[in-house]
Length: 290
Image (cartoon, rainbow, N blue to C red; front, side, top):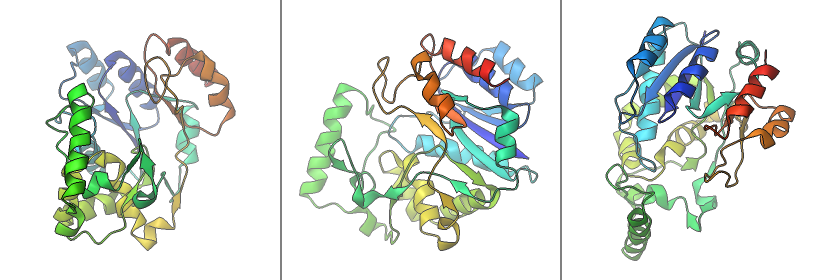
């Protein structure tokens, strides 16, 4: 049995339709952002189809809350001893193959499909991303996306660089820090290892809780520091993501212009989908995957 974990923060109708499609072959677990309204009609639909859902964490962009919601769903899925493989997607994903073919692809598979790279070797927006874990941030309280949040972020970097802050040293983190995307496909034992490691290393959890974009660091750092699990990682998560700005969003909100690239590639999911821009694309993908 396989489970799909969905992290959702908008578009309840789209998320429900996605969950219903996946529910034919997977156990589906959804975390709705605590601020997201889930009307009774949708709750009834989810209940009637035995789709698991919760809404416990107020998710803030840039904070650990996204990682915390992922951990919450993983722990829920692991309560079912029959689940042997877990996929993590967002509520703005859509499938690019049939549920049956996706399920069959990972049947009896012990590989981990995940992007990763050493945080000391990468810069984003001109910032060494190791700073995002080396320094202290509080984006569960400050809106990182606001104009104030952007200036605040620059100020935090400047002050902590001047004072040579090193949270990693203070917390005695002796791991190589890795980063990658939160969207992964992993066998049960890898998921259990991530959860057990996090639960037994409060210093690592503290690093993540006071870091920036920590959902992109926790699984990669835990698994890539384990020789046993690192050798099983395939550095490809088979997601189509367009790293361009489109329809006011980066990464892009997809539309019909992306259909050929999606169907020509070796993908199982794509993102981001948002109405009205993606409606025709979703319809065409559904027709293509009957």
